[in-house]
Image (cartoon, rainbow, N blue to C red; front, side, top):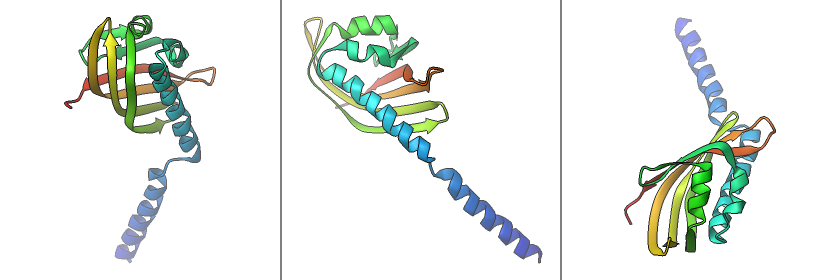
Amino acid sequence: MKKMKTLFLLATLVVAGTGWAQPAKSDAATEKAVAALENQWLQSQKTNNPDLVAPLLADSFVTTGADGKLLTKEQMLAELKQLKYSSVDYEDVHVRVYGNTAIATGIYKGKGTREGKAFDEVERWTDTWVKMPNGKWQCVADHNTAVAK
């Protein structure tokens, strides 16, 4: 009888655990919404228009560049105005939702000029998005790491 109770308890935990591992339907909708925001960020780069990304960033936004430099929202937007992309793309984009927080990861590949000097870079990025009290999702932090080509 004790073995049967133990087996029943284990089976119950396994069945319950599979429900926990599946994302909720609202998580799937949030994943799509945040992925669309990441795509808007990409479009701002493709069109060399930092104004498209500005509303996506929280006022307290910070970014850590692949060079280790920490920038505020205003500093990053100023730097973006110095960039002129000839090509840019994202690969391997994934979004995971944790309540009112979403973590997006991907690979960025960009070519162009920065203050007149050519660049060709590949970076892995992680963005942290938070659902704000007004219901909008905004990026609060971005981290980039250079990837060998």
